[in-house]
Length: 453
Image (tube, rainbow, N blue to C red; front, side, top):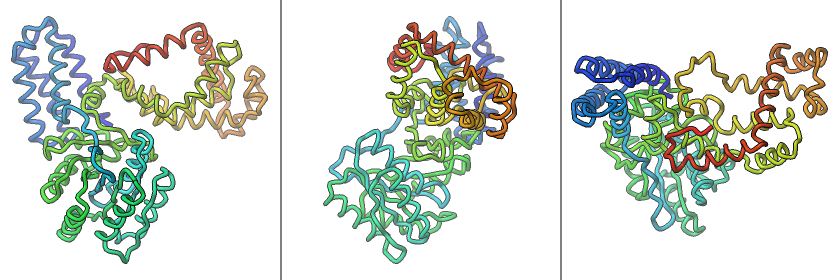
């Protein structure tokens, strides 16, 4: 997400940081570049104008002009105004009500409502320890009901059955009654979408809203529609009291216009962003962290939180114990490390959160496809070869390449990478791992503004 915006803004930011003093001319040039970057990112024109004007006013103020490093201070202003444009802080769900807390999902067809319902159910169950009931009121698409049933099974949420011959309001009220009897904490109601906004659709969702009185009404919108996403959200908000937005498909959106426009246009916060197809690929929207990523400064805090939630701590402890006892780091261990990377949203997602990585040339970065190739090579090895990689010589390398559908050079590269990892693990066993873990634990207190290893 934000690839194009990051590329453009990073160059401008780099130039600004190097300025010993700021003049009207170089502020004007920098703001013109920022303006063009935002417009190319499909940010709505009124939002861009307002943003540039606020930065210009602050750039001319004493906090920048009297600073010892005005270039860096102006970068700080740009960062703060980006955060402000997106809503300052993360708006959490309001679940502090008498159970069940009802969440109503609204949006156009194809925006990712049903998938987001499943993702949200998983997040509430795993991170907030809530038991969740999901119900589908989409009586126009039998496939939507079946899809939600499948997702509910996958994320271990309870599914309330419904069918196409029922009234959507009756389905929703029955689901809430059932949840109340079963002492369920949260009910998420998935509503019907349309290919476009129409009176019939709006009338039905208004009836639903009045009947269930949800504590949260979330508008689900596809980020790849750019500023149209913000305009659609505004139209919905005019007829339905939205409490927040879920921005989907952000992993496929290189511009970021929707994320930067929605809050300013609708006044409603983005609460979550969908960052992939898996049910775990939903993140709380933190404006400060997103702004940091846009400016190429990474988002280490989110990376650490993700590691805490998704990394198999037992497996990590076993590996640390094995290495500390002087046992080697073999191909089975290497394969496990690759799995951990993929569990954390893949390499692209991790690199996006590391400071400076956003500025690296795309062809210099390894992607998930290569990770899967590496896994295929390891899977083509015998158990003995995985445990003792040193035995893999010429004829074995050719056999492994043929078995994995890769080239001998790929096998050679993997063995070289394994050797490098092995050396790194040996260093960690001499106290390096302890330092690394202490650094990661201390990172939260630093607000994610550093990178300790």
